[in-house]
Length: 247
Ligand code: PGA
Image 1 (cartoon, rainbow, N blue to C red):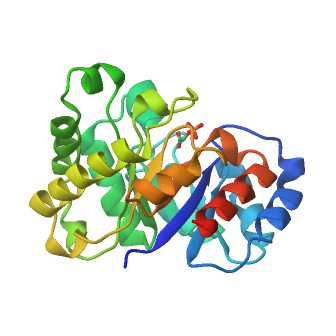
Image 2: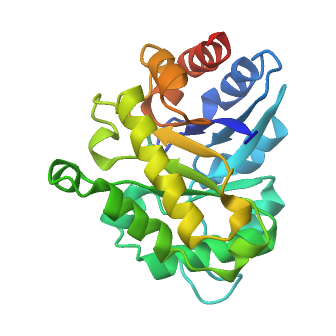
């Protein structure tokens, strides 16, 4: 069975003052077979790590593709690991579209994250135009294929299906659409990645809330969620955990 995850992606949000309460509240989640991860902005990672309660781990929202050197503004996987992060989101659509990250860059980030001992959470997802044209399956397969790192031979990668049209829009994919699309993604992983990844964890992200999680859990054929907006409130994030365990 793939591991199940619930990951909070704060993006560039929340002041640091609320961190202690947030970690305490989220840490009250009852022990379940769900790994909870909080990915705050970089400057909070060390504090978040120190404030962990319960079964919550800390992750980063991004990482550099180089271990060190003259790369102004970048943060290496080794630095993040040193602060206590054990996961790193790689290739989020906001990185791809707003900051122009290419598949080649994302592949390097993924390889270095793995080499450094971080578990990457690779995000893939189509935009509305691609979805409406009926090309989502091919587009997603191409995104999977584009990650060509030899590091895939040796390590776990979590894949998050995050359709761009669902991120921050209040319009989530239904459980049925998730099931269909994740089957297509699994097929692509089977074709393009080493066999060991065939049964790996596959998450969904995009406007997940406590209210729509039941349908996604029962019909979505997924192993958890990457949550943006609804993760900013610890009680709402906890409610998603509750809905996952209730199903
Ligand atoms: P959202 O963001 O839950 O606010 O849609 C998800 C994400 O971008 O990871």
